[in-house]
Image (cartoon, helix red, strand yellow):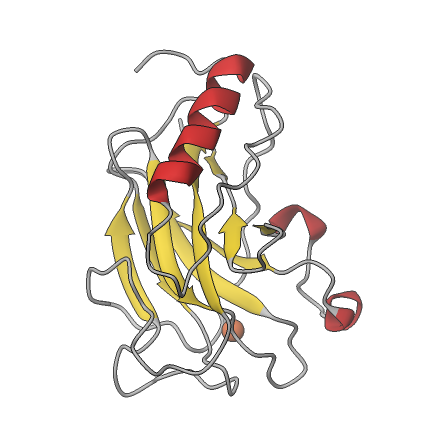
Length: 194
Ligand code: FE
């Protein structure tokens, strides 16, 4: 895998977001802005608590959205990268989140799913924007793991949320970049490997 320069990131970022977006009218049609830059050693994505609602053995699925599901549809795309800005093909991403009522499915696997980054280290998740619950601001849980490497557990947040300021776990470096359409988001994970 060649080293990804800033120019490469800009180019492939725009390409990836554009091609990863679906034609389903429920979701955004317009590409997201690309990652502004990828430094030689970007900060690793910070670790956060797993919380009480993780369930192992989620189904492999990129599409958590189900017909008739309440909530704002969201397509989240991005890269899994190393601190040297190299893509991590085949990285495991396991997402879980609350529904539009702020409830986790603890008996089944609704709004839970894992997937593997493609050969360019890209992922795509179709879901809904989760509701707030129990004093927590809006967030999506995720575990990310490069093949045969330790698991990074963290949470992603949404911009312009009034409750971000009062959330005990919120961090601005875990904010999803939301597109103009409000239904397209971008987040690149940076793994500290080796
Ligand atoms: Fe949670």
